Image 1 (tube, rainbow, N blue to C red):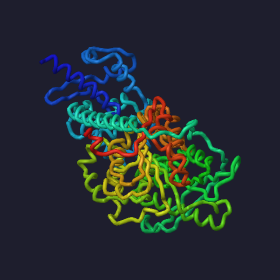
Image 2 (cartoon, rainbow, N blue to C red):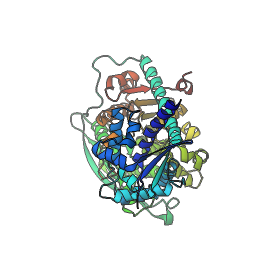
Image 3 (cartoon, rainbow, N blue to C red):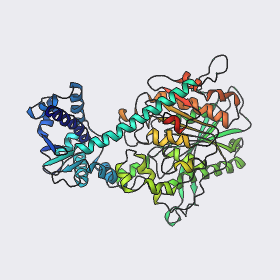
Image 4 (cartoon, rainbow, N blue to C red):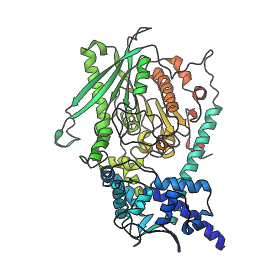
Length: 550
């Protein structure tokens, strides 16, 4: 029994060390880390951790724990202690004083505490800021050396509770992935005879890119003092080369995610334009890369304003109005069919296009989901953004647009800002693209389960195995917050290939009325596209009973 307890404490210690990769320390600095599990408590000196991190030497403090882990796990610990996050103290400080930053600090403060056993909220914030200002930078080891008390306590019971919750979510997501793969593999719809086309390659048309600057002066009810909304738009117009253009050119609008810009889907805009689509890519000024730069620079104090949940759809409405005006005065725009528009959005952009397709903001769901107790224990980071919408006046906003005839939502945020009642109101053909390795907007609560709520008769769910929240993005035009390769994930070029092929098949079918493309919206075609390391599956229906294994 004693041996079992020692093993349990040692395993808990490894979990505690993982927690340290998100902390820091100041003033005199922590000398010992106390690992508590109920009434049991063990400690290890920070100097022992530092010696091992820098030289690989295991002293007597660390040796007792090393007996219960593999050499690979020890090397992971060593790397975690010294891995540097390339963030400035201004960037760290600005984020930690936002509402989202304070929510994360409260969550960490339940696990990591000063020796007084009070919440670690303030100590963690101070340690993170001071560590990022140190020449060595923001590393887990430097965080320990900047922690403002001599002792630092890690509550392993709470750590294991959170790890258990995370494990349950991962297991549920894996089961959902298996279910979707099985359903996809059982589909027997044949592809047309002959050579199977690769819809991810460029088409026969050239394109011209035009930069517009739009000024909407009608936003008084959302923005203080009736300020105007100024935003840039890139328009990609197809140009005839080997074949003539259609008399009615279909239009697609792309909405970027939080902290991105209109360059992150440039590859898709060029691809669709080469196949005869006109593509407009607006930049949403309150939630783009410049907004995050302003947060880092100290000129704004929030990641995004609640009004952005209204402004983003209104940006696209205003853009469509502008394209209609230009169609009456500019010969280059005369062929554009603004009465049948397709939308594609990623993350916050996924919310945007679903709102325009008819899903209203669900204030009752937000009230239920955004209780402090719910937020403090959530593993869903996107909830921190969705709950910002709860600060809006709870009125009915007219965000839908009848010109929208088909939408694609990539990694959309949906569970609380919409919920089941709102998503069920979408009637247009809809495709949701998700990745089961998304740690920002987790696939199961944000995309897979919401797909089961759709009532639209034409609906598709494409699942990219091992796809992340950032797999489908390319580097944008503005310099945003740098993301390490581990966060972006493997082979983003493969994910972008899927988006090109599925996006073309979807919009040809539902905007250009090309029925010959419908067979490529199938599990059979997804199998022809699928390649390692990101396997692709596609289904057209999924029920809650199937997700539950019934």
